[in-house]
Every structure is written in structure tokens, then in C-alpha cells.
Image (cartoon, rainbow, N blue to C red; front, side, top):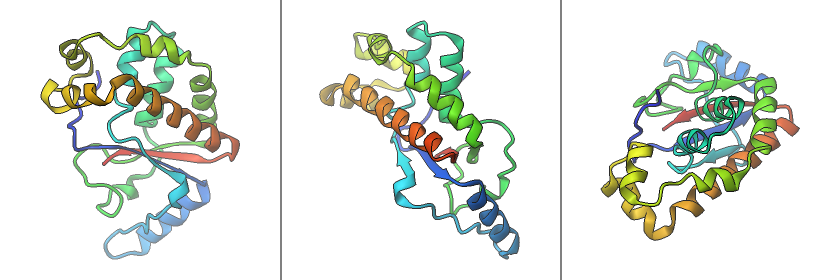
Length: 184
């Protein structure tokens, strides 16, 4: 079961090489404060705000096959393990949620392939018609998320998040990069 995510928290991604992860590990070990010196290039970072958090519920509501549901869960939450506990540092994230999680280059390629095959129209058609239903499905309070987003348009927000997520993963897969994911 997915957790309810407070509004102020945002979904973060960083495309990195395995060598960069190892360099951060060495810096964290050498630092008296455990600081990994986390500073991936801005072009390899993505902040999807909260816009991607409805995707797992939408994938399920749309009746997508289990491989697609698993892929979106992994894309947003990472894989367990990954031996990156050294990134559990206030220089990386705020500590209000689970620490960052790692996806290996192979996992990134798998996820990118599945996300690329997703029928976005089918996913977007699963968005409930009313603000109250949206709040229930996505586990948000109407006044915090749904009401403000209905003025902007929930469909464009979620569609944009899916497009950016797919493109970000596709580029990481093309470059054979790992992915670090977290909520900050």
C-alpha cells in the first residue's frame, strides 16, 4: 500500500553513473559529518513536484498489466537495497520520508522500456471526474491538492509528469546511467 504524501514534498530524480555513486560513498566515509558531497549536474536532475504521485493509482485504475504497475512503482520509489545508506544525509534530502533509493542502469533500462510502451491516453482516462473522487483515489485532501489543480487542470499536470518521467528515464537508459529517487 502506498503512503499518503504531504503536499510540500516533491518527487526527485537524479541520473548518475555508478562511478559517481562510489565517489559519493568515499566522500561520505572520509567526511567527519558523513557528507557525500552530493551535487549531480542540474541537467541530470528532475523535480516532478507532486505531479507524478497519482500515476501508480491511475495505472491501477486504468487496468494496466502488472508489469506496468510494478514499473511505475519502481520508477518513483526505487528498488530496495542498493547500498546507498550514505545518501541518508541532510545534504541530500530533508529526512521527512524514506531515504533515497537506487536503481541500477539495468533496472533503469527495464523501467524505461515499460514506461515507453504505456498508453498515456488510457492512463489519463482513468482520472476520476470529480474533485472528491480524485482526492479519494490519490489520497489527498481536496483543499490541499485537488481544488487548486482543477483550475490548472489535473490532466495536463499528470500528462506532463508522465511525459517528463518517460523522457528522463529514456535518456538515462540511453546513457546507461543509474537513477537515485527520493521525496524531498
